[in-house]
Image 1 (cartoon, rainbow over the protein chains, first blue to last red):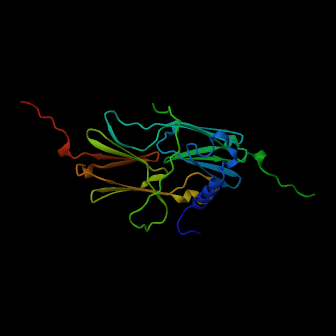
Image 2: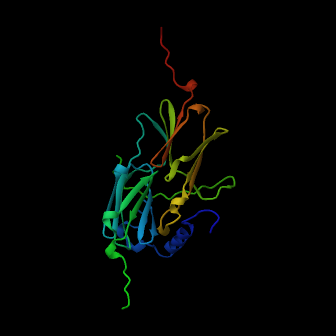
Length: 140
Length: 132
């Protein structure tokens, strides 16, 4: 157990090393693989997957999440609005629209997929479809 | 204008510290916007994952220091399989001018964005003098 919580440090380091060797695209998610906004972290809990993205300042009404089969599409827009007559001294926050899809190694149970948006963090919980789950076969 | 352009990924900037830290964990620089209106200066800081109760704003020697702590416990029972960004606390400092009314500073957190309103001191606000 490390002294301080650094849940992705090792994995991120490994991925960067692999990237340097050969551009990695997780499960070849096509034209919108790594490098697209928003950056995603993918987690597994048992059979189910969770996608987490940081979307600070995005209104939940501006987010659109679609799930079909193995693919999740996350699109939306973010706007940064300054009041009229304000003079802007520093502008680091980005705005614009985004549209990204990611393919998972499991088939998603569309009916039971849920999403949570809190403090600018979006978490999409994707349960594995029942028919996609492996079955053990008893030896008769 | 907003929504017309495709957003690009900007990698999170890890904080290079002047002083040594004793609190464990990584620290990132939150992206900041600063704008000025007639009566106040507003700072907007992006700190996704920081709850309103975990924000600490301090003023010491003309330096405004903002710290946001994230909650790691949500990541405890799940296993990361693919990652594109790292997580950590947020820290950033700003030097204040003495023309800020320090007692009037207000803070608000919404959707992972901390908004700090720094009202300008009364004595520097423009005053209109009526001709009698």
